[in-house]
Image (tube, rainbow, N blue to C red):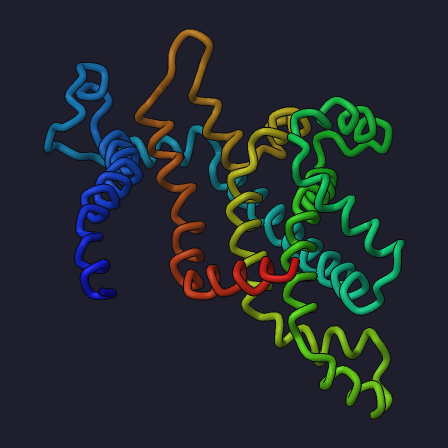
Length: 275
């Protein structure tokens, strides 16, 4: 019976192939635009065979992608460090020292995941102006960490609740305090969840545009998405340069994601099972 049921699932393969084609087609068009001469793009010859590196070179130089990539790198590194440190610490307290207060805080974090970020843009802008954090990378780091904490805490809390307390209790008997228990005993066990948090948020930080366009208005603090957006003007858009910049911007994220993708599903599953 099971073999018969498996045999009837052949109809799913065309559907999956179609979904894969829909996902891959925009990337193919992006690559075509990135390496086609501008004259062929404007004439509609997107499927021509002639290729050039001019779009990529021009995008790198005219948009200042070197400096923008440096800003994005700093934003990503410091935001990841803050997100992992704060969310793991908070999740440990919520999971291991459960009271009505910690449960309330956890519920607030979960509820905040359902609130669209655009709603908080104006209040955040007022706060950022008052603390002189507009047009600063450290201000964007704070915003990125704040936006990422709810889901990161959700994943870490679910994973920690699934881990036996035996190792922690043995460490406490040996004289470890709670801080040492968390970072020396528990944190190494949380490797899959940590990598999941890093992968998800790294892509988010590197590609962050929605808030950056409001809070980073000076060119010296532009991130990669903001630098690429300078090619889109009110009356015309340089699609070749946009595609060339996008191609350069996606390389680091793709490399990191492909390197650690095997931990992604494992971390999501372990964090969501008892979240």
